[in-house]
Length: 310
Image (cartoon, rainbow, N blue to C red; front, side, top):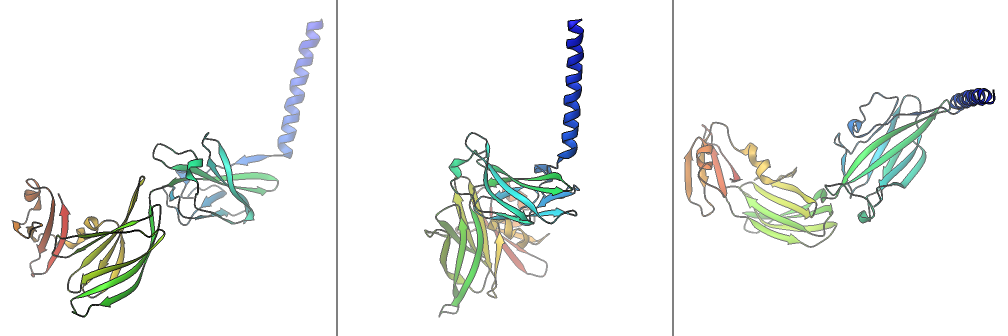
């Protein structure tokens, strides 16, 4: 009989605990809406989501720049924000926060050695936003992969000054960058395989003068920032009319559009010797490696050129 009463008591206790938990859940309900790497572009149809205007759908961002986020919801306009990074023990710790706001901005990461890195040397952080709707807490998350390769944030052209000979100009410009303490500059021009290289030891904002830029042909000024994590490249393309365009990437990729389709092709060596004339550049590439000047001519006699590494 004693065991029967013990068994009956156990059943009653279990029922009371379950009833109490159900009652608490009705008083303090919580709903988690997590938006991770798969939904990092903010395209989720969830009622609460986080979007960023300066981070693309890959979720990869520069650790050297600040980044802004915004809460999207049809139910509320503000939330409580938190930014988290993993410490060296891989435990996420709060870095910054902001309450009662629609937007949230995180600062560049300093002291990167204090945080856990993945196999690529990146730090994966989390931006959270918690909101309350009718007593229910909803939490959206946005995963960000911070990379530490250098970044060139802007190039500002200051002056273009013609030289007295009328054939060349000097270009003055400022380069804003982070992730390294120096830049490399490489200057090339159309119809020439020669390259002028120099280094600029001026951190953060480099004030640069590119000299002897020919006025009669295209010229390309490559700005290269490198560190142990990678390389960033921007190219200034200077037209014969004196217009300067800032382009992302290396000159080899940028100049691809400068070869006519179905054109007569001439390949010139660095020493100026003509090595090939024809219509199939692949024939030449099978037998040669190195840097060459490729000149193409269309049926109207118009020419274009680019430099190629085979």
